Image (cartoon, rainbow, N blue to C red; front, side, top):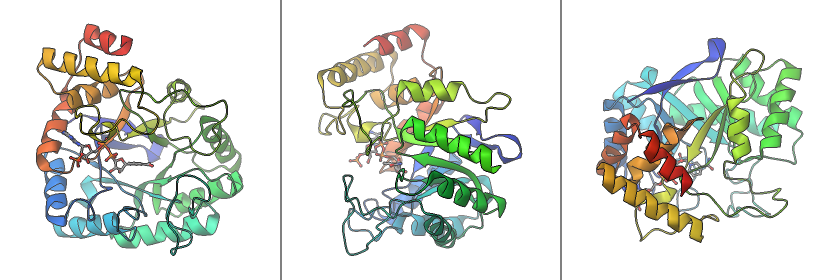
Length: 331
Ligand SMILES: NC(=O)c1ccc[n+]([C@@H]2O[C@H](COP(=O)([O-])OP(=O)(O)OC[C@H]3O[C@@H](n4cnc5c(N)ncnc54)[C@H](OP(=O)(O)O)[C@@H]3O)[C@@H](O)[C@H]2O)c1
């Protein structure tokens, strides 16, 4: 396993370059298997774990199933201090009687100050911890004034219950404005942004996509690269669904969320070709491509078995030759 630093100054933390996604733990993946995956991840040196306050409300869970499972696992293993726990708020159900939707009306709880304060404290209780290492806004909220959201995250940081903050499913300009607002308020700015990112790209969006902005963009990486210098607090990019839920290696899995086009299919073909030539698997090459990029992202992988995790762990130490990377980039 390898490690990197995210955040700055006395808030900086070291995390494993592979993050383990716990979204399906306690719902799609049963408790015994989830515990085995978590144990194996820690045994392999993994330290960064990702969850949210709404996993998996859309597949029969009540929303805090993953946090609850992690809480039980942490309590039984005594490894909390070795780990960095990230959770998210803002995309749980505002009205519990209605479903969640990715298009309006979404029924997201949003990022108002009272929601952030209440939900973060509930996450602490469900996880059984006294500090959240990384707290994300799960989806951007354009209805709440940015100053209110930024101030609420900053308050939790000043109280010591949250280490770093971040935002997910967000347009770049909103990240930049939120960080400028944090500077105005004298609170730590978002240090992490979590977007969907993988070896294949979505179709270019329509001219304006104001509501759903789940993917990374070249501009995001360009902006992230410009940070981490004096007066420009660092911004780390964390990548969710880095294997496109298995679609990079398995024909039974659909290319989704705009990624179903001829360009993706060509990249999936080249990925398989390169992988077989260098004696690796497509998933390993896809993760190594991301980890070894000029601006590396932290992949949040979601294995549903120990065998899947074992395959993915190899990628943490896999360095691609420059000519291999060139071929992958060119496809
Ligand atoms: N911020 C957000 O809005 C957001 C959104 C989504 C996810 N996330 C985070 O990102 C994490 C990962 O998301 P994800 O589950 O979509 O990521 P993913 O790693 O792209 O996909 C996981 C799926 O890929 C398949 N898979 C995993 N390892 C494999 C392997 N070695 N060989 C073959 N297939 C393999 C499995 O499918 P099968 O189970 O069918 O075998 C697994 O369920 C989540 O747990 C969550 O923490 C965040």
